[in-house]
Image (cartoon, rainbow, N blue to C red; front, side, top):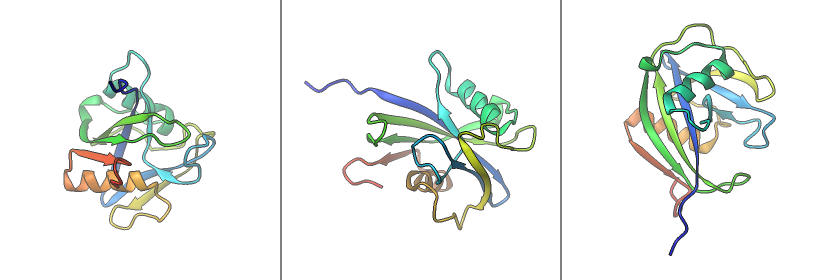
Amino acid sequence: MSARAMFGAAVYAVLTDGDRVLLMRRAGSGYHDGELSLPAGHLDGGEDALAGLVRELREELTIDVDPRACALATVLHRAPEPPYHVEYLDLVFTVGRWRGEPAIGEPAKCSELVWADRDGLPADVIPYIRATLEAVRTGEPLVLIGWDGRR
């Protein structure tokens, strides 16, 4: 009998301005530091996905988001990856509008904000984030990362 899966759960936000997407340079976590990612964070216990997304965007980017402006775009199921060694379910939302100008709210975790061309992403975007943005662009509802050589 197989062991029951234990998951990490995270929410990711895709904020766009025309043909550009907002990326954050990770820092200080020991996980993909120095690479570009989408604004994201773990869900807290007892917190629904939209509440977690709104909280993370307030903490990380100092912006206010109405949950009704967020739409689930894709789901990632990622195989275990060091240093966490657990599977992850990532809920990726597009954010249609927000109040405030995105700014670094947690400088110990983010060293730079980058508005990048969606069709010409920088080379240092985390590979699964690159796959995520492609899935959002094409409407792919589920992305499998690290399972049997996928992506």
